[in-house]
Amino acid sequence: MTKLRRVILASSSPRRIELLKQFGIEFEVIPSNVDESIDQSLSVEENVMQLAKKKAQEVFNKLGEDSKQSLVIAADTVVFVEGVILGKPSNEDEAFWMLRKISGKWHTVYTGVCIIDGPSERILVEYEKSNVYIKQMSDEEILSYISTKEPFDKAGAYAIQGFGSLIVERIEGCFYNVVGLPLYKLNIMLQKLGYDLMKGEL
Ligand SMILES: Cc1cn([C@H]2C[C@H](O)[C@@H](COP(=O)(O)OP(=O)(O)OP(=O)(O)O)O2)c(=O)[nH]c1=O
View 1 (cartoon, rainbow, N blue to C red):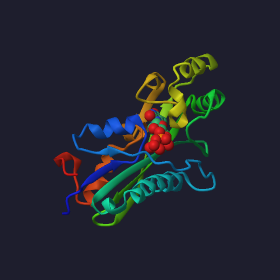
View 2 (tube, rainbow, N blue to C red):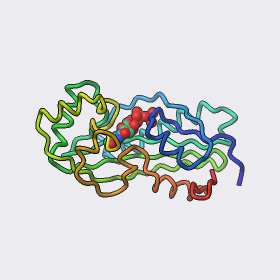
View 3 (cartoon, rainbow, N blue to C red):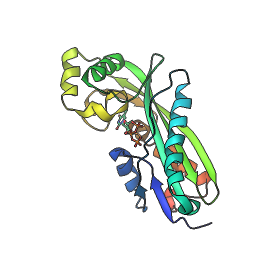
View 4 (cartoon, protein in one colour):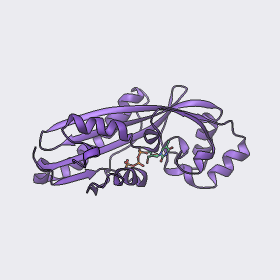
């Protein structure tokens, strides 16, 4: 197999960076700059896969000659509840509305993952989904969660890994998918391309 010269995580998300760091591989972080607006006319799966692909492609295209020996990983996470796709809230009112919407029920978190492998010129795009049950919250509880400032850069206005752990009652499926990078699925995709995080092969 051609040795990769560069492994790139096309993400500005500190969570994704931390999750990938655990495996001791060397990688660079180059955030993409794509328009992340959600297309409510497409399915959730299509939305997250399309956005992950756009992010990966934008960064891959910037690599020039290096791209032939590089691998780019990108992801996009949204929350889906009662037929509505929730991205990141842009202000406090929106965060309040989103938290009220997900309070006292199950919702589904979708993450699209795209890997572009320069040596084989293959592009893999898949998604993972997990179900999360948020406790019934009073308006006062919602406001006190918003005052932690945690909701703002998170899809659905919460972070399962932070103060949000205090409002998540149950989860079904991959925890890391909810945080923003489904590690099990990511390695399955890498294995299809001949790599393996378990063996440090990347
Ligand atoms: C639901 C949930 C989301 N999130 C985060 C993961 C993502 O960073 C964010 C969803 O936004 P994304 O658009 O997927 O990612 P991003 O804009 O933060 O970073 P980039 O596009 O550069 O990769 O929400 C959590 O950290 N915890 C959670 O429990």
